[in-house]
Each structure stands twice: as structure tokens, then as C-alpha cells.
Image (cartoon, rainbow, N blue to C red; front, top):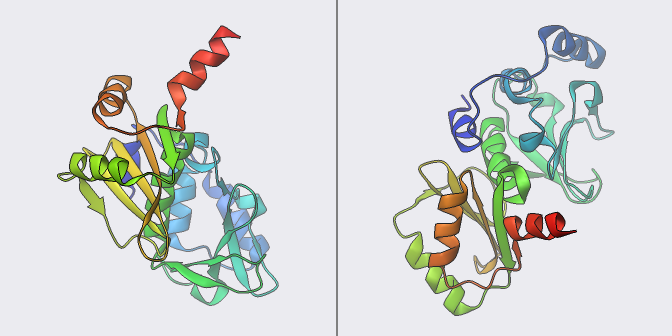
Length: 225
């Protein structure tokens, strides 16, 4: 079910909530949780680098139905966006996910399925610090964009996982470029994440990009202090 996530984060063990916690949550809500949500909580729910490094997965104890009858289970790091499942869809094994950008007043479709949402979020969390080696730059110029497009020409593009403005490219399931775009698909930000330092350095040395942030440089600054 979550093979891509296990590979991306180099995970080999399950680290999640026990069955009793999940059953108590279902009893409190008076609703059964979707199968995919329970599987995610039980297998991956307690990995902080995956679930709380940037955006925040709600713990089972925090799950609650909104006034508009949506089960909110994920929150953007500044609380600007909420992600939820419609109560009418809780009976589905792998329901669609809706996002609210106005504090829960209106909801729009953000992912066609919960499993697609979790994969998309895993890639986003990776470039936001979930993986040990990350870099990013905003408002890349045309030469930087050309350099990256040439570099990732043979990488695998992850398509159809969400309705956000983004493009996701991976190589071997262990390095990822997450591209922020606008409504016209123009590139607005480039985010890179890698598991291994050698691969990370090789990418940085190859690309003609003036990075705004590089994680290992940030760590060096802290070490010097």
C-alpha cells in the first residue's frame, strides 16, 4: 500500500498507533475510519519526519468532525489549509480528500483518494525537511529552469496524485524534486530532497541553480556557532 513512502524515507519497520487507540477513536467519533487511514496510522503514523516535520498529521486522539461534517486529519504548518474526509465518505476504504483554504468554511477536492494524498504529502514533507539533505530556491530564472529540465529529462514524473499546483519528479524513489507551480503551470519554486549526501552533492554540483537554502550549509553554520 505505502511502498513508495517506505522507499523514499528508507523505512524498514512499522511505527504507528495500536489497534486499541484506533478502535477507541472510532467509538468516540461514532464512525468507522476508512481502511487506508487506519493502515496509515498503524504502519506510519508515528514517524515524525514523515508526519510532523512541516505539515501536521492529526493523532487519532485529535481527530474530530468539523461543523460542516468533515473529518479533519491533516493541517498545513501555519494552519492556513486543512485536509479532511467528508463524513459521507468515511464508509469508503480509500475516500477522496478535500482541502479547505478558509478555515473550514468551504471544501474543494485536493486528491482523488486518501492513498494518493499520503503519497503526495510524503514527497512534500521530504523536501521540507523530512529527508536529511534538502535545498530550495524560489522564482527560478529561465536558465535555472532550463538546467533542471535537462537534468530530470529521464526522471519519473509522479502524476495524478493531487490537485495542488505542483510537479513531482523522482529517481530510484530516493531523490525527489518538488516543483511549485502557478495556475498556468509556470515554475515558482524548486525543492530538492535526497537520502544520501553524495547524491545530493552531485546534483548541486551539476545544476546551474543559485539555491536560496541548502541544508548541509545550514547545519555547518550551526556547528560553527
